[in-house]
Length: 216
Image (cartoon, rainbow, N blue to C red; front, side):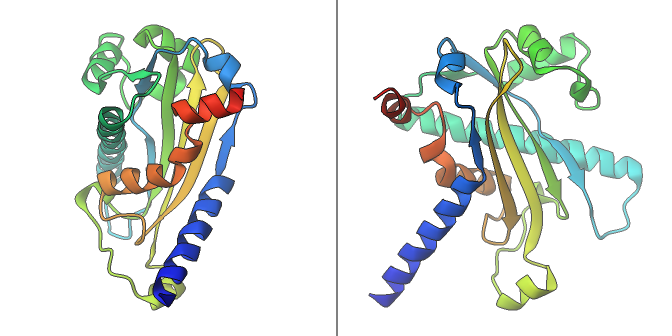
């Protein structure tokens, strides 16, 4: 019984902490009222590996990690949409990549384009993008074995992820969520995104119930 109570308070603490890292534009409903399709972009990644890796290899690995997050978000939203209806759809990332490639936009230069430009090129109403700071290769999988001494040595901390949704017409920030990445957040990219969004889903602005509650 004591363990159940402890886990309950721990879950509440984690949830409250997650909500503190969430920003929502006060005009979200007004600005997103006509949103139908969102595009998920690869996340811009910064790798700080302990291993001796060349600058060229680092860039290649950063791109791989960024696309792994894009894939993981598509997987998560696809599963979520099957269980529960969203008022929006998500552009197939294969189509997103193809359209960007046709316009000579890739991972190396996507950051020079504005949200408005990318939304127009992709034909979507909003953009999901973000940043990823890592000191491990999360896509390859990491250890989740927990030891309290890891927190003192820093071995439990793998980095940080920041996700944001921007309006296509105005380019303005609609929603943002930031989260630390550590041994408790998952063993790989898919696991991280799944656990991350489960903590944030009650605050995810496109949830039907939340939209209804805001109107009430």
